[in-house]
Length: 71
Image 1 (tube, one colour):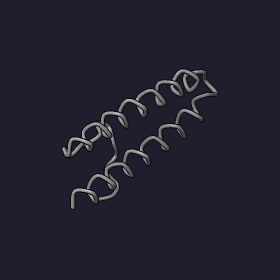
Image 2: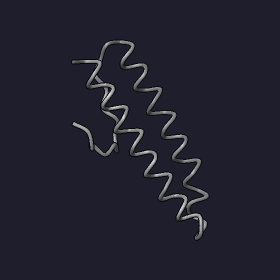
Image 3: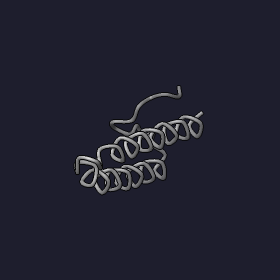
């Protein structure tokens, strides 16, 4: 139960990040995307570290801003 819920949360976050990178790729044409790429990468790294720390302590972790496609 716990492992499954955390795996689904990680999958939802990964899908969200992929969609954000796709939007940033389109926005590169108007320069905003070039700024978004490092910001998306930084947020991804921070939220993954926060999730890993929470899971290592046995606490459930819900990533902020994640699109909940999988239930």
